[in-house]
Amino acid sequence: MGSLNRCKPKTRLSNSTLLFLIAGIIFLLMYGIALISFPVSFRQFQTFFDFFNLNAALFIVTLGMCIVMIGGGIDISVGAVCGLVTMACALLLQSGTGNIWGALLLALGIGLAFGLMHGYLIAYLEIQPFIITLAGMFLAQGLLTTLHKEPLNVTKPAFVALRRFTIEIPWLGTVNRLGVFIPCEIKPSVIVVVVLVLLYAVLMKWSRFGRNLYAVGGNRQSARMLGINVKKTIFLSYVLCGLTAGISGFVFLLTTGAGNIGNGALYEIKAIAANVMGGIMLNGGVGNLLGAPIGTLTLLTINELIRAAGVQSNLQAIVSGLLLYLFIVLQSIIMSLRDKRKFRLALPPWLKPHQPPEGKEAGNQ
Image 1 (tube, rainbow, N blue to C red):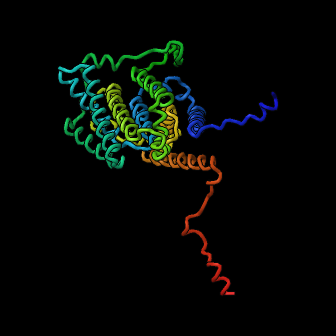
Image 2: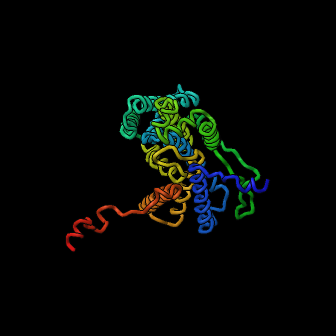
Image 3: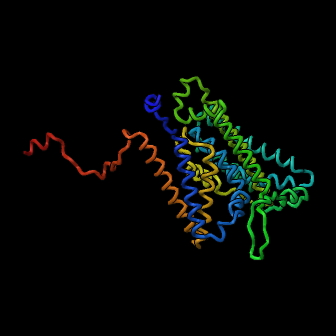
């Protein structure tokens, strides 16, 4: 029996699991650096929870982008759709006839409309995702500025009460300088993030749609040969991404309490960066959905660490960009090392020393 166990082949980690573990280690490393460098702020539990309280909309957008990226696509309209939803819902709530449930339905309707449009054009008409979602981004931004150009604060009492509502964690908190224990607080938007993470994780891990999406993202031709409806799978991924962007817009409004033309700006770029940091490959087929929140936490930790260090805002973008370069190169090296036959570091042809053909060398001799 002992010899049989020793001869049993070792199971190899999948690429998605390996990149997810690396993403988790990098997040712990970055947060550890933050704890050591700035212990006063980062050792407070509330600082960690505020990542979710203040950036719940970004976490949600990243989840939708993750699903599209696993399928081998991209959606750069999610930030503009998020901003459009905040302004549309703010107008509805301030009109006097709207209520919170009506605003939520409006948010889902706008997100669903963009998701259906993008999904159909990309999946069934086979137009490039970047071009279609770029058009969607311009459309959403145009509609946003058309609805209302100035910031619009929502003063509806029921909505304000929901915004101010907090959930205390009595057993977790910090003691202030006066010796008073202050429990940690989370907003209702954090519950939305947790629920969506769990639902989408189950969807991608155990549903037929999730398995099909990984197959389509890995190799569409092979997926067709396996009998997978590639077009339907791609279509559903964009529909789900659109719905997620709609939810994100409503949560954004809950966080800020106002519609603004700047809401959701650069969210699509941040979502792509967070997913890359979370171990989701840009070419599709590889990635763990739980890597999306991990990558978002890593991105937020890096930005907060840079801000706490007193770095200027323009340098923050430079440092974040350089770190993103590092993550992409690290992913490429790791994936290449998994297949050593394909791994080689080669110079571009124009940098290689010129070697004359063997015939010419022989003739010269």
